[in-house]
Each structure stands twice: as C-alpha cells, then as structure tokens.
Length: 71
Image: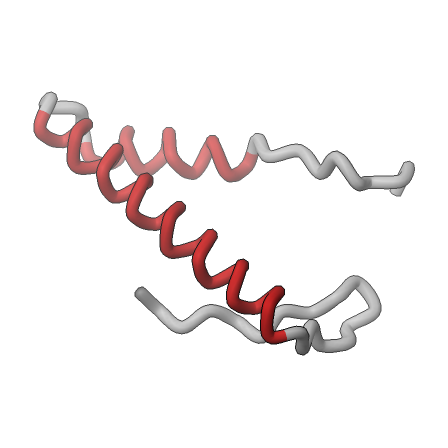
C-alpha cells in the first residue's frame, strides 16, 4: 500500500493525533483489501477491467459527507 498523505483539516492544519492517524491507516488498509477482493472477483467473473475500475470509482464519487453544514 502506498503511504497515506499527511491528513489536513479544512483550515490546512495537520491532524497530528496518533490515534486518529492509526484509525485512518487501519480504515484504508481494510478498504483497500475489500476493493481488491471485489476487483478480483469481478475479473474472475469476466467483467471488463475498465468497467470494474469505473464502478469502484463511482462508489468513491457517490460518497456523501453527513457532516456538511450547508457548505
């Protein structure tokens, strides 16, 4: 897995809490493994690779920020 970025808040200050960074690392490792598994399953079921990548990207694009305060 590629190193994760330095996490920033909206005001561009760095998220430095060790526990928060650890949780983010664990979450991204889990997400990467789940996406890899889904990608490989699709390929084994003969789904077109480009279509699989586009479908996975669509999932990311469709994420909703539940904390958006009217921005």
